[in-house]
Image (cartoon, rainbow, N blue to C red; front, side, top):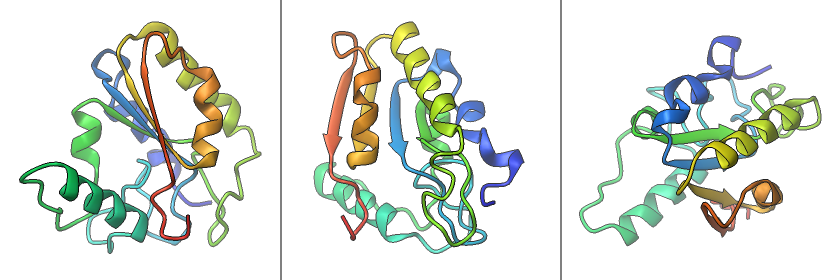
Length: 156
């Protein structure tokens, strides 16, 4: 399985509930060896930035004056600044996207989303792609802002 155990819960460890401002919901970790770092869309230092993350950076560059595309694809800074970079499944079989999507992670990540929705106010939830949009029903839209868009993958 990709995303080693020590990194599986990294998103929650780097972004405690009391500092949480936004949630980015991904599907599952990158399935190629050495890519996943425990944060959705993020990659370990020295790993080439994947196409989905490149597209995220391009959108930010187009929308935010002065934004410069980073040299690497690590998103730890975002997590430490209050953005929960959560994948719906926290593990994946090497070489097989969504291979652990029905292995119980949905129950766990649904509970995380519901807990955030119930205990916080004013959180921005970014749901990219149909997989993430399915989680929208777990969020109290009277307390939070939900932004839905296509998945940043070039295949979407």
